[in-house]
Image (tube, rainbow, N blue to C red; front, side, top):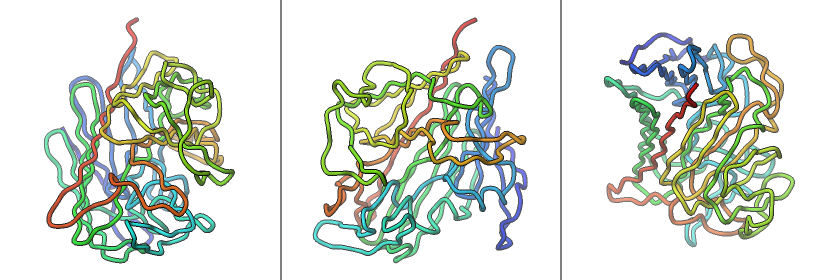
Length: 327
């Protein structure tokens, strides 16, 4: 069942709506047409209702706060060094919105757009058109983001088509805390990532060149273990299922067809008010942004991050299946 309610009005006078998808298993997912944003995921466990993603209660907070909290990211997730997009032998200057570099789609990326919405019994489909030249990206793109709730899983599917060869690397930027959005530091979560390689970066999170072996380093999550440290790094996946487990009996399996995942432990999440007056602080969540491989300095983007023409459609799928420890 999907219900719709008014969430507020943007500073430009555009009405924003919240859509709540509920099932018979005690899961309720709320998404906004502002930024195709995942605003809450409420699970029922041991007689409690637990919201496991960070978010805000008002549209003003989504407009005014940074961090891409829960938003759909595009056209391109991650950083483009020196804001120069390279597609094959062609180069395109894109918006520099993090120093000299491009981050997460630019100044007004998909996270700051109000999407069109259509509902079904157990899903919400958001869509928008990104015009040629928006934030410097070539081609007019038609984008959709489908949020689908089954008995035990939330699935997010991004699709895109373009009238010109362009860059395409969407993701959802949910901040997960499986102990509850108000539970504080999330670095005690257990994490498993099927990746033999990760991307080393410098102090402003730009790749230093190439990929590195995780063996014998703090980047080895091939077996389930505690996160402990600070991360804002991309891992090259050689498997399809990731795991994240909190310490109150709630876990999550993430199945994706993406080539990489960005692990971010919310180091730069400055102190701010979140849902229900909760104060969010650094390290209060874990982001697992399923996406394409990162852009290396002075190199073209990788093949999975190129959207072709002639009606060809690119699809990215990620499923979050919730697991509950028995009493």
